[in-house]
Length: 235
Length: 53
Image (cartoon, rainbow over all chains, first blue to last red; front, side, top):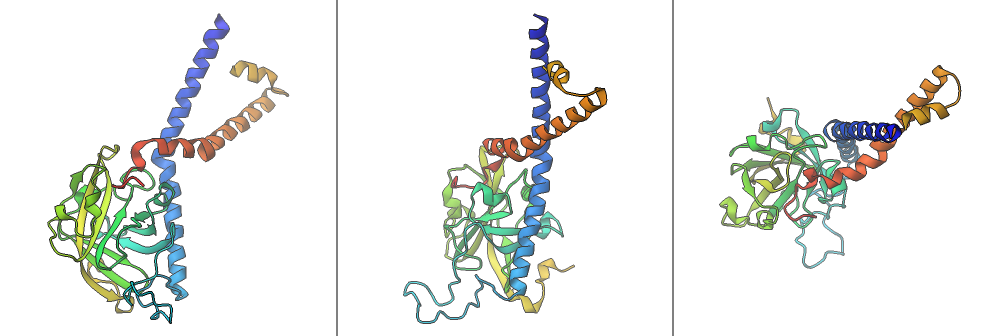
């Protein structure tokens, strides 16, 4: 009898310890891992850009002979799934806030940065460039998402061009099934005409998954990287 | 349970303590490297998209 009680209490203590360790893992260790993974991705991008092999750059030479009839000539090459192609800066979330944007929104991809919805437009193109990111865990990239306000800048670079988007809406709360928010012309944003839009999505509430938070932005300005950082990032 | 393990470790008290420490670290390593990464996606923090991909 004593052995049974002792073994049972030892098991309870063990389970408790494992749970505490798991909380440490989720709250702390995923952040450590994500920070190094994101630094890796950005370093990878910068190395790529330094070599001048901008795979998805808008300045890709006009396709020789193999021009497919459907694609417009300035259409950039498709992004590679799970690979970084841009860096995002949002001054409102912190002057040093910058995260890599990877292609796809798979769980594994979102551990290494923000994820671009593969079905949506490409950076700076006509349509809706939609990006998802973690609110909590894995570096908490969108922790301060509710602080975004109309007029805030969202700046992205693909190594060749700076794209400055301006947020037009306060964070909008919706249901996870509301896929119309990443439509080319997201109606609920108040946009009525086709344009070059950006959508950011994350989870709501902070630690839950019952809803999503959305903000919309429009492309305000572009400039080549040679012209220096856009005004929104200068201080 | 732990008493049983302790009795079955070789050596004197110091050697047993050292082996216990190594065992604990090994368990923590396995948890962080394999078990928690598997369990973490079962929590809701990964659902950040609107199309559930």
